[in-house]
Image 1 (cartoon, rainbow, N blue to C red):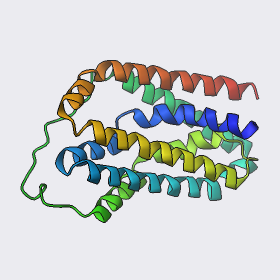
Image 2 (image 1 turned 180 degrees about the vertical axis):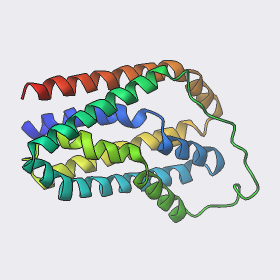
Image 3 (image 1 turned 90 degrees about the vertical axis):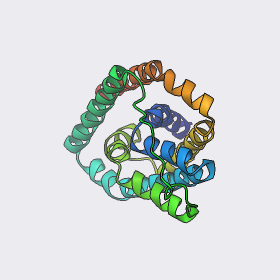
Length: 212
């Protein structure tokens, strides 16, 4: 039960975290429009594999260091809180999705390798500071250092699955122009809701850990 509650708490933050538009979202959007649904899904799958890469180095390296240093744990905790609040305020203040018209060239329209899409997704996510900051700060504070490594990795599998499912949904809906236009039109309110949720999670994390 302890691990189930820990996983649900982690997923509550992560679910809001992944829907906030960023570099990964922009790549999936472009793949959907330019190369189609299948290419976008494969790109999202590559991002899911990259997430397992992030969880691996977090469990093997940072978790051990954090468990030995209360000061480092506190620093990472407040870095995570600050990042959540910053991301939430930034999202809340955005007027809407800044989706520019994509200029499609003849080269773009050429068939693209699914393996290439997989690699693009992996590299995009691996070099994206958003998941790096999540795992280096938030994961290490939301998950207790005594939680077995195998359990932590299972959390990562659940998170990767959620990420792939989200981007598969984005790939599907953004290949339908009417749905895509409506989603973009509601971007202002979508940003406000996700922004407020992120700020709320940030304050909740700060208060709950301060009492420990």
